[in-house]
Image: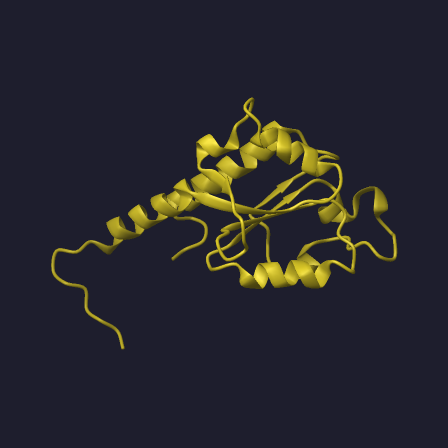
Length: 158
C-alpha cells in the first residue's frame, strides 16, 4: 500500500541526505588471499589511513557494505564467497583488487582457479583496481570513487 507524501516534504533532499550518510561510512569485508592482501594492509596503515575517509573494516558480513575481493579465487572457496555475499545487507558493493579475481592473474588457465569473479557472484563490481599487486594509492582512489558515486546518488539507489 503506497502512502502519500505529506505537504512540504521534499523527497529529493531526503534521498540526497541518505546517500550522503551511506557514502560517509562504508564498512568493508575483506576477502584477502595472496600478495594483494599486503597492499590492503598498507592502505590501512598510518601513511594512507583509509579509515579517515570513512572506510572501516567490518567484523561480520552482516555489518559490511563493501566486499573487497583479491588474490586467486579457487573453485573450492567459491561457495564461501557466495555465502558471504548473500549474508551482506542491501545495498552492497563489490571492489575487485588485483589481476587474479579479474582474469586469473598468473594462474590463468589453471583448472581450479576462477578467471573472473563476475562468473561467481553475478554482479558488476563497483571498481576494478588493476595490477599485480596494485599500489595502495590505487586502492584508496577506488574507495574514494565509490564513496563519491554513492554520495551523488548515481550508484546504489535506495
